[in-house]
Image (cartoon, rainbow, N blue to C red; front, side, top):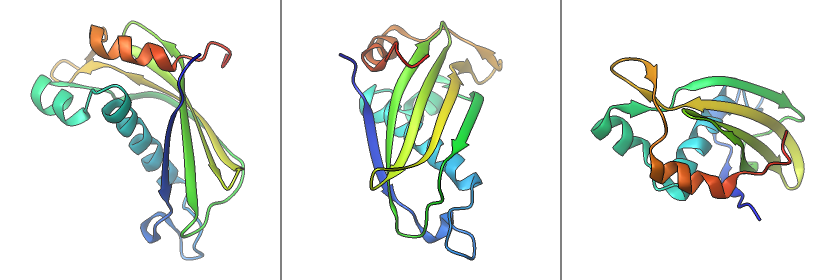
Length: 141
């Protein structure tokens, strides 16, 4: 049975337009935050340690989002992250966001493990690859 990484956060004023509705580019910041928390909390592979100490990063290679409903100031958003696929130097996530059980968006995001100095992809190290394996959900094709 695969694991699901979950994270929740409240919509803040800085996420919203003047009407108090989340301005859609802010969702991309939230998606990035969920990915960062996943690597740090679930995989024990912090971006600070990876980027600052080792010279590697995980730039976004592809992202697709389907919005289902608006979120508003002070809503509590529940994020769930599963892995669709781990490649040699990439990982594809399925991230869903809901509020009180109501879907807000569904996202497929592919991150690439890359050497910052050369801007070239690089195979995942063994430890994070092994930790990520627990989150693969094969039925998410």
